[in-house]
Length: 374
Image (cartoon, rainbow, N blue to C red):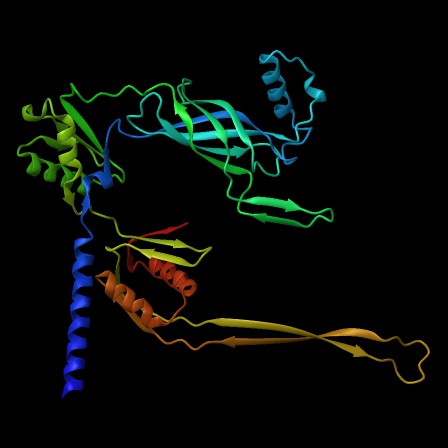
């Protein structure tokens, strides 16, 4: 009786755990508005600049890299040193492109991270220091300047015989807080009468849900979906002096975004990802594998005894073996993702076989979802 009671107790715990997982899965569909949308203007801006990395241990650009020579010569001229660029040896210098993201509401003096990437034929920028580099936006204005020691997280070493050992990617580096913001992006919410909320993944149904949820939370017909990606929100009088408080309240509203039915396939890795709304109409599938195995064994052929003209030669012997796995028809259908997975698993195919099966099901018109191959 004790053993039976223990088994029943264990079964009860397992069932409770399964129920908890299912409940958690159902609640996990809800998302905050801040995770699926952003207020217009509150986004990052891309910055780019061209600079030099110095202090390399002979792993910089080669002498034939003309733009590195010219840049270094111009830099020296600005410092009062005049030299012929054709006579420069730049093996300790590398030309790089510097990129960064200027976050919203960044103030003058704020520090931002930068990525440094070699554009010449440098072998490595490990241990180098980036010289002062202006970072510009597409409007041509300089918003930040970058400078500092580079961290690559990798290395490259080679011997005289040509043997090379490399870890990670030594021609790309990172500087944490390596740029200082010099010019701010003007943005003020203090006197706005209306605000625009932009969906990260435009969808008409989701836009309508967002507008309805905002109206319910703010108590009035203040939000309106202008299209599938933009929701315009009128600022109520009670929030005219508290715009940030209203934005905070809107961002933390939870709702369930609508998703299109899509199957994403990566043929290079054999990865398959299905959305929750994928459905398959009843269809019969038979899948069998065809294996062709070719093996070669060299055979030595000797000349006839006492032969004066014969020679010993090696003749390849080739064996070809073809195997075709047996496959039976299996009914595949489903109106929920669980039924779809159960039906596909019943075929007993590998992920790469499932890719071909899904493509064939889509061609037959039974797959009620968008099929995207990346």
